[in-house]
Length: 62
Image 1 (cartoon, rainbow, N blue to C red):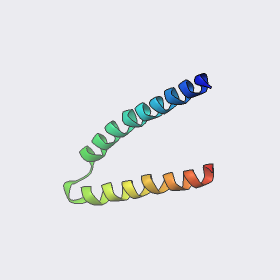
Image 2: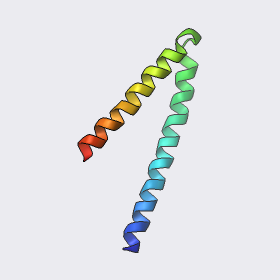
Image 3: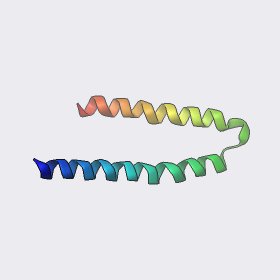
Image 4: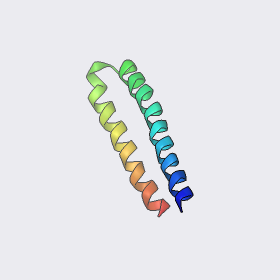
């Protein structure tokens, strides 16, 4: 039981680390290439797709 808890904790940690390593450079690049006049629209669209697909993944995953 303890081994399962350790593996689960390590997996959660690595997933969180991977998301951070992906999101920070992606958001920096998105900000750099998006014109100032469109930045809020692009950020809103990205957030809608990003958080919307999580809901679908959770439903599909059970």
